[in-house]
Length: 104
Image (cartoon, rainbow, N blue to C red; front, side, top):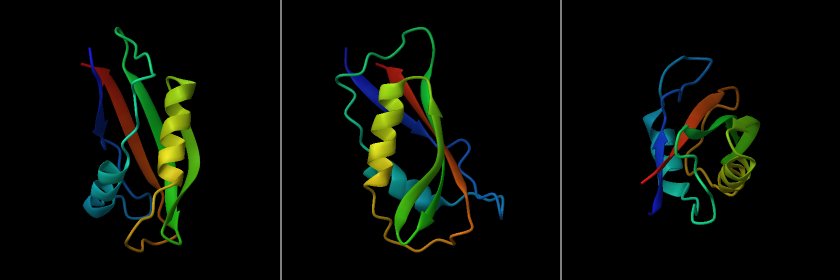
């Protein structure tokens, strides 16, 4: 059975303005492509990673990250840290994003 990732930005928002930012969401979804072949996803519970971050100097700076598995947390943290955001965003905005992983 193949593993796949379903990334849902259910809580993607800026704290300062309280509104969604579709361009940043699209940039993240387009660039974050973790390899789940070595990860054993839970069949009975939802695996997830919730990350709080800001964008400074076109880079994602993780403020807090939590999740259901250490491997998933590490993988998403590495993916986000390597990202280059092509558009400038206010330094003061904090974004929250939830990645949900499901077994196909």
